Image 1 (tube, rainbow, N blue to C red):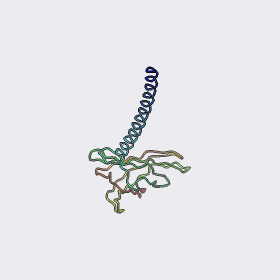
Image 2 (tube, rainbow, N blue to C red; image 1 turned 180 degrees about the vertical axis):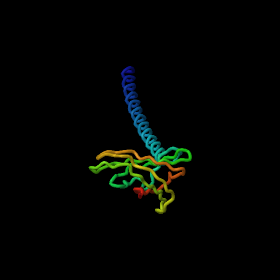
Image 3 (cartoon, rainbow, N blue to C red; image 1 turned 90 degrees about the horizontal axis):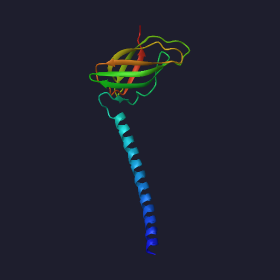
Image 4 (tube, rainbow, N blue to C red; image 1 turned 30 degrees about the horizontal axis):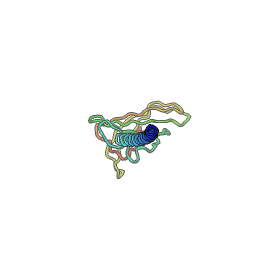
Length: 151
C-alpha cells in the first residue's frame, strides 16, 4: 500500500508541475509580446536622431501634377533633415522631371521652412522615390505642402 500511494502522489505531483509549467510558459509568452509591442511603439513614436517622424497630416496622400505622393517620411541625420516619399503615377501618361516646392507647416498650418526637390520620370502605373533635404530640423513637421514649381 505504501508503494501504490507514492505512485499516485508522484503522478499527481507531475500533473501539478505540468500545469504550473504551462502557466509559466503562457505568462512568459504574454509578457514577451507586450515587451515587443512596447519596444516597436517606442521606436516609431519617440523622435531620435535618424528616426522617422510622421506628423498628424504627413501620412495623407498629396497630389502633384496628377501624381500621388505617399509614404512621406522625414528623418534627421546630424544637421540635415531628409524627406522621402513615393510618387505613384496612376495616369496613362509618362510624367517627367517635375520640379517641386516643399513647404513645411506647423500645427497651426503656418509655413516654417521652404525647400525644393524634384520628381524623376515615372511611367504609367509606376512609382519613383522622392528625396529632398534641408539643413534644418523639420522632424516635428505637422504637415507639408508640395506643389509643382512655377516656370
